[in-house]
Every structure is written in structure tokens, then in C-alpha cells.
Image (cartoon, rainbow, N blue to C red; front, top):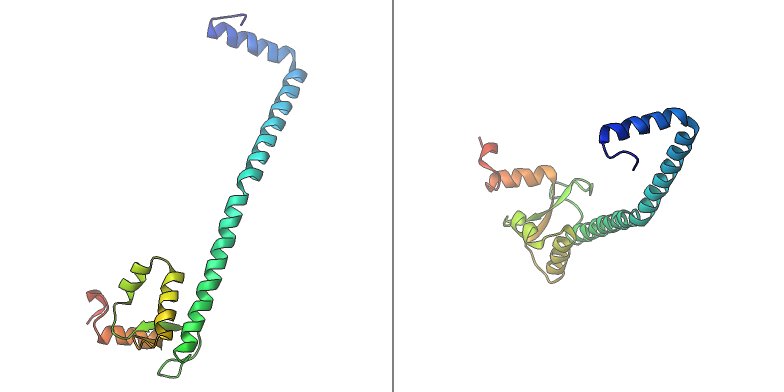
Length: 150
């Protein structure tokens, strides 16, 4: 270093940059290009991982949907009121406590697999209800929080 004093060094650098603007421009471009290459290589290296996770999430969602449709079909495919649109049908626990079972399962696919296994074994603990009938049942059996009660 020509100057050990930081102030003198700054002055010298500033003067050099003013005297050599073309060289400064070349160095900046070279630095930008090197940085860009580094960023692109980093993206190439690590962008594969999120793509795999997205594919895995889509696969899990698809399998959960398929299991849910299998369960609904095994339980009759429609509510006791006659409603049969699967978008609003819900798998209901006849005696309640479905939320506890869902938490114990950990994931949706595990939860649906357990229900499917139990239904195939002959369990009568589950039924299909539309969203309206399910909420009415929950209210009548006092499965809802106190703030919903009148």
C-alpha cells in the first residue's frame, strides 16, 4: 500500500479513479460479471431442492385427495340430507373427537390411511356429512367452542 493512513489512501484512490475512468469501468464490469456468474451457479446448485419439495408436496396433496375420495365412496358418497358434491362433504366421527385423532396422526395422508384401514375392517365410527349437517351435529353434540353457543 502506498499510504498507511486511511485518509491519504482514500484521496489517492479517488484521484486514480478520476484519472482512469475507462479502467474503473472495465474493472466494475468484470466484477459484476464474476458476481453474476457466482449467483447463477449458486441458484443452479440450490434451486433443485425446492423444486423437489414442490413436487413432493403436490404428490402428497394428490394422494390425500385420492384417499379422501376413497373414504367418501366407501361411506356412501353422500350426506344423509342427499347432498353429494365432494367439495363440501366432510368425514365425520360419529362420536366426536376427530380433531384429537387428526393431531395424533401427524399428517393428513396418515390420518386418511388410518380411517381407510378402519373402515375396511368394518368400523362404524365414521360417516359422511355435508358441511352444514356436520356443523349442526357439532352444535347439537356441543363439540363446538363456547363462543358459538347461544
